[in-house]
Image 1 (cartoon, rainbow, N blue to C red):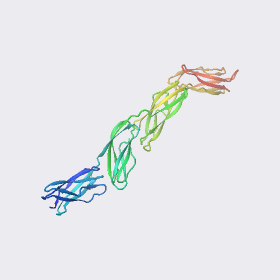
Image 2: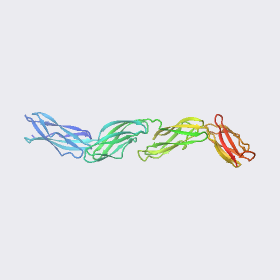
Image 3: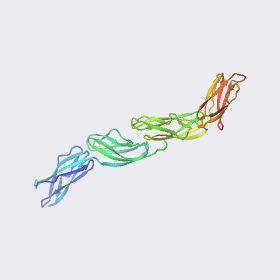
Image 4: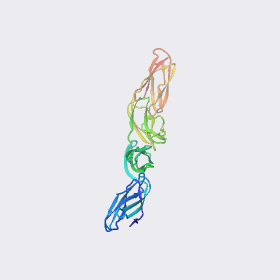
Length: 381
């Protein structure tokens, strides 16, 4: 007899294959072959298909496997008609399959050191015969995505995702690729970031009483500005801009370069080291090793003394110090002591010259216990 089967309604997930068993009953005492017709044909990226026929033994029941797959959310309605071509008898089912939001299609583990990008390629399938453009979104700023991806027709396209963390730690996030034609592709990323060691080292060389300046450069990646606190663990190294440096918003994923100027003023002869730390709560932490080499004071001059001259002498030490002063020509006079000169501050050497017998040149010496002297060459005019 011609019969209508029960209406079938199911909720299924996008981008997941679903097989719906359709019950087919043979009411005769002999085997029957039923041809299958599915109407209307599905459109776009939706497929609804099965075998062209099914054989059912006498007085028995078999399940017809109806296979469904879709890329986009929505409802697919169809009529499945099973007909005995010999007798013309048939039975049919009305089916309604509702595709709901895409589940997480896969999970990936990504681990790296802060500021070191870890690349991942996710293959996205495009069953259509034309190029499909998709956009990607993620609520984790450490995930770097392209503005748009193009999926080639009738195949898979690798889409690059980069995990570039700024702070140590771990998290779970989702990245979603979306298009009107193919709907959403959702993937879960389990990320882990570990702290970095020193970014680099910088050498310095300067004589006691003078300074050498070098520049530490780093990339700021945030799309907003930030303030970085700058510190060193050795007072002979100082930050010229003070205790902080401001970074502007990065114009793109490549970041923006920021500079920190460091001054090295040694207070001993030989090697000394320090660690520079540049840190922001949002932008992360950068570490640089500073390698300093101090040398003997460099002789200076000759200075012309037209009756009188003031030369600034700086105490290069991080504590107050006293110095003795001597000049080897009686035609030049200067105070013979500099007492309790404040740390890293300057005091004038007031030199007077009066022409007399002998040479009009002199050597002025400033001494501090345990160190070679500072030498200044003078010429009276």
